[in-house]
Image 1 (cartoon, rainbow, N blue to C red):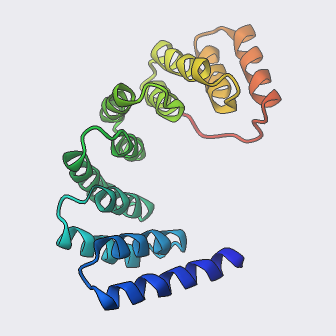
Image 2 (cartoon, rainbow, N blue to C red; image 1 turned 180 degrees about the vertical axis):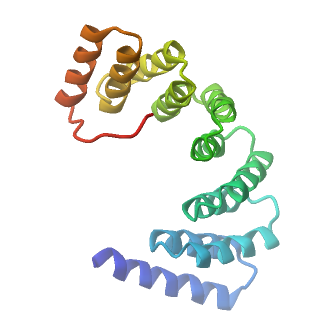
Image 3 (cartoon, helix red, strand yellow; image 1 turned 90 degrees about the vertical axis):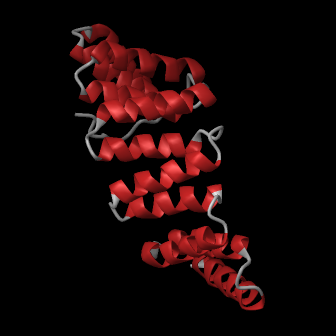
Length: 199
């Protein structure tokens, strides 16, 4: 409830800023972010679209718009927005990663891997990019490549339970049952308590 109150106050502040200057893009963008926090994704899209009308190369607005569209399962439109964000700032790995997740949601795993590779090239310490790259390979039944990605994630952060869990999944598919059991045990030791559908 406290966060809800803060979000409402923040919205009021951004609305006042917009009344003073309707072309103030940061206020529109921040308003969109608050609306996303409130799961009002369609309203958020309107705010982000105002930003891109004012500033067609605004990286944050295009990336955030992609996130809102993805939350609404409008994946093709989300990809377009992420591509626009990449055009605005090709050195930022975030939209590459987000687009990769979107391609996974569309079961387009080769394209997802390409996006994760681009994100990793820009930031090879991104554990999540390595893990989701592995998931994409796994779903293509390329278990050795999947295992290599999960191992890379684990090398970066030995305390990441997801890396160990998915390593266990890949090892199991490769028939390495003892190593698989060890990886699952390590994931549980690190706090892994749920199942994620990797299949």
